[in-house]
Image (tube, rainbow, N blue to C red; front, side):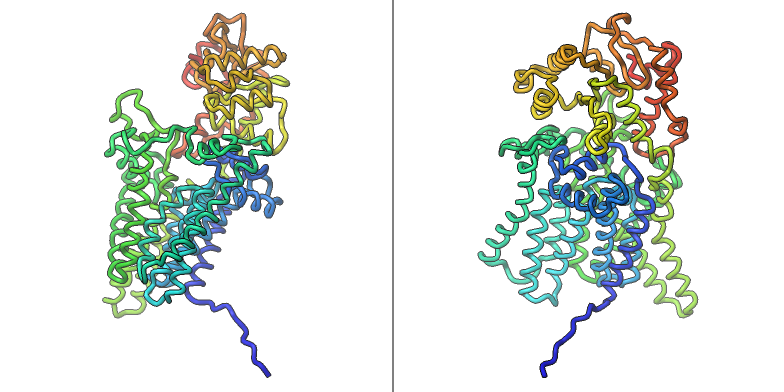
Length: 618
């Protein structure tokens, strides 16, 4: 008789390290994940996932497909959380794969500690608990690193090395339809894989075909655009429009030169973000502190020790990790050429200097993850050296326990600040969005200022079918031809000529007001929109504050503001008192800004300083 071999899964230390890490991180992230909408891009991404729409450039079609699958698999969790679970699982798997690789370098126990600690770095944890693309991009990055590390091992056969190289090329190609930030890992992945025979012409040709196969996921964009989904940013139906979306032309992306800010300031911004990573919860403010910053310095020293230890063990690993750290921090800063963050350069930059709209620490997440890994590798190396000099087994156990406690510092020190389920922030975006839509009359038009007074409204309208009678006109999007075309074709708020050619912002705003009047559609202006832009909408009108929106008023002198006390009283009663509970301090001022706008409903006098300072009264 012929014997059949039964294949069993071998529970190697590397595999066990990966499984344990994944379970721990998924549990950690799930327990602290946002229960509902969050500010900035998350609401738009949830909308895209639920409707297979096209979010803002570069469109992220592969992420949208994955998020749609997540929304279907975990639908019982609700339309928002079912998509957020994708970030939770992706971040957990990234840690697990990282631990599986690191177990060969520093041992399974230390690898678990390193991956969990790296996963608790502030920016990594933050991305893992809301709907964003960066968690899945981190997973793709770590997969590339793991494949590259596998390809470069001395014991790997040439055939296995060729297969690993081909898979690495395929994964790199997936970064385009997923998110280009994953390519930050490519230099380190190549450094890991740099061993073995030179690739043949046939092998390079195969790489080209695999890269094209990965890039083919971009075709989702024009295929969906042909169906004109409600969320159709960029409308990439033509090749020219598709290229514009992939290149993010809508945002006027800066090149490498000229620098948008001095290079020393841009690099200093990276160090500011680095100071937030290890123990942000101990001092949840942008500025350095005697409580938090020394721990950041300690983690830097430990990271150097970890890098040194890995280099001595395997120079290939050391070189690749150094390259990963440099690419993910300084390299990103140089390549992106960003302006100073909102909290950076105050007192240094001249008044009126250009700043980013929000903190951009999430762009550096891979570099901070690598830093967390190296720091715990340094802790393990120090504990191992110290234990080797001790003869007492009990003392060696104490040293190991102390090392584990130190490695857990980011988890303990960041936990409170990273818990997104805390009120009032957990429900503030949804509450504000509903109140904003409810402030608009039936069939009304609402002019908004940007992400935080637009994206949550899009979600409510397109996913939950709430107040679909309101047309949201996001003023910063009006220069984009695709957005004007939608206003002309779907809502009849622009003439075709104004949609096809750009006559200037003032002319477009006036055209929308005229078309709204012809259709008997009243309009309101979000109090988040700057007063100068509000006055562009109708320079001949005065404005009556109705809470969190302004209404045009013929009884108010041109360009000035008054209070509609009757409407304000009604708006005040609609706002639940719970939204004014104290917010935990943090780096994102969106919550404080929205709370301030909601306080506009409490105004009783035009002499109140809040009218100007928060409610865009002037």
